[in-house]
Image (tube, rainbow, N blue to C red; front, side, top):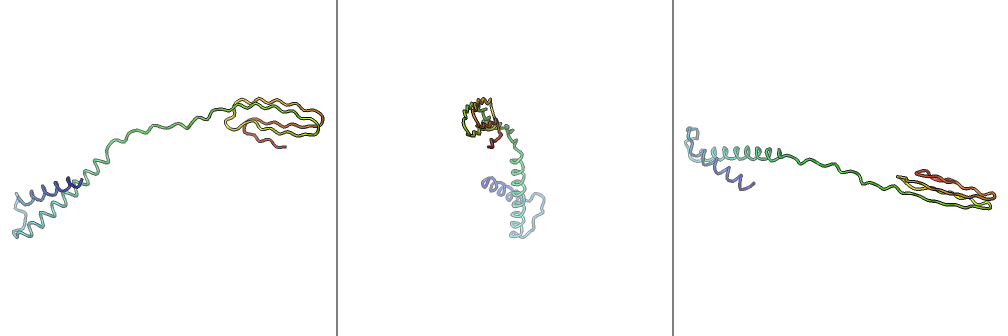
Length: 122
């Protein structure tokens, strides 16, 4: 970028010093100042045009990334309660797969089973 700007400045400066239309002042120092100003303005214009053109490069399409697939989890629970015992079972987390629960209660016992995302409460 720096070398390109220097080349553009040099070419425009020398082109302005040639003065094919006789527009430069007669005094040599004034002619150099006008040629340098013209070369600076042209270098800025070419730099802006180059920056705009570089920004117009096609952007590669983005491919949507799918969320990772969480496998279903199967749950198998078995409970046996007797006497005055209490058992609470919750079967699995999201995403819930097949839930297989088996319970046997005797006497004055209680069993509470839930499946999926529900929480067991005694």
